[in-house]
Length: 155
Length: 285
Picture (cartoon, rainbow over the protein chains, first blue to last red):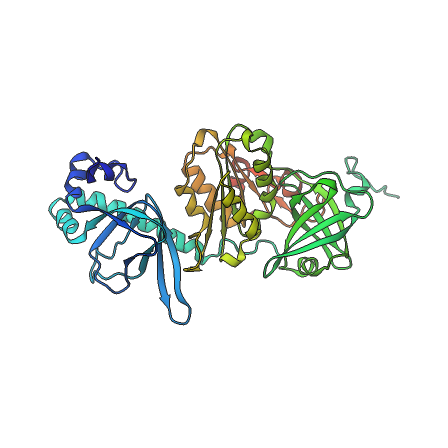
């Protein structure tokens, strides 16, 4: 049976992290599963968990009065979910719901923050990885802003 | 002193500029501003087109526009998917079954699907860019065993803006190829993905040494998508894109579609990224 550290080693977010660091962060993680349509995060609630998605699909949504839940992003295996646990006020900004059977490793955010504080090298390595994910999401939002499917040459 | 008018000696036959009458025998609405026309020749048809080529469609009395071929049927039937964004294309979108329109073509380069046989094929379409790739998907399905892994990625602003929605769903359901759809925004009822189509590239399995990529969509989408596939290690020569420019004559004479050293109507519209990518990076072109 695979350990949490084994699972993390296979995940692209933790790719190339040294085995010692993997074992260190694995102590904050546990295996979790979500059924289809099960709520994972709720906007405004305390953000104290970080998820590494192993399989399945998750919809990130925002409730818009008069329009209902608007899905703003979907995540799948290889992605990570949630970074509001990183910074005060530690509150989720969006809702997240499983779209099918989801398997993930859930990390205790406070535990991970403490380990990053005690090991600056690990903290830097994880911050780099989060920055890369955030940059990718930011680029995606920018592409939507410029309307990549807009009309080219009108005739 | 008299001056003789010098005529180009390499001019195409006169019929390259003469529209051939076709009758609209079918009209299907794809989205709020897009329709697919099915055309049959009234008499002599144009030469058989290849996937990726385009025709000039003439709305009589209004004007002519380049429209890619979205379906190639047996018996000389053509399908063209038109988005009504200007005077001519809006007129074409409005024609009813039985109406006549003029067709010139086929023009330009094709996707070169035969050169991709035996390899993996990744098709990426944005918005109405699925239209010229639709015949490619038909060929891939028809000759499925001649290709390895086939992946089709389709992006649109919203679920209701995906062209050929029913057909895309049938491709997904067939499970003979991998099909992923994504939109910019959606309600919870949408079961596809959310995000721009270039972001799907990192989520699909790619063997860069043996993958041929075919991309069509607005120019900005081409650039972002090409950057992603190059980032996955695919050589620029294996990435083909279909360009949209202001084609008017279709035979490389008028220069309206010139992009630096190339004429999109004759050297394209399908180019290897290695040739056209550097040109798109130059703002002066």
